[in-house]
Image (cartoon, rainbow, N blue to C red; front, side, top):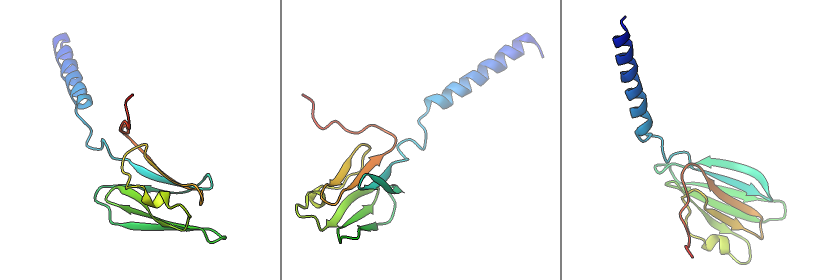
Length: 124
């Protein structure tokens, strides 16, 4: 192998590597998950996908407090709860990194974590 061949093959290899690094990953944007905490402790984790079937998770404690979390099409919401104010139930669907639904009276939190940036709520 001559010196010129080695330089040519190295240049071709370098172009191929740079091309793969510049292309968007087919997995980009995936990896979003809902992390559920009860009373500040880890409860469950569900990986979200836009094509996933609807699923409900019911959380109930010994005192009778309950929350029903609905997961559908890569989004999450608090479907029902027996807390007095119902703020968590009236919160809309969430589906982007950084969004959260919290039920303060029942101490249930659903956080969305994963790749990507959350949207800006307000710019001063």
